[in-house]
Length: 57
Image 1 (cartoon, rainbow, N blue to C red):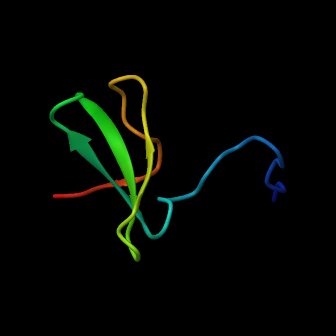
Image 2 (image 1 turned 30 degrees about the vertical axis):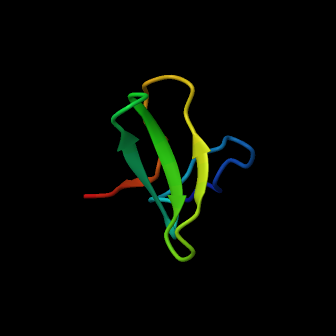
């Protein structure tokens, strides 16, 4: 039986497009970056990673 997707549950299918994350070795935090323009968007306060964002190599 088919079930409609629940709305408002903040569930994401796949990764966020056009964004990557990298580790800042000085502060030991993750930094989110826009893939097209290259600008830095956000920095995590904790040492955890962003959810659903690809890692840069």
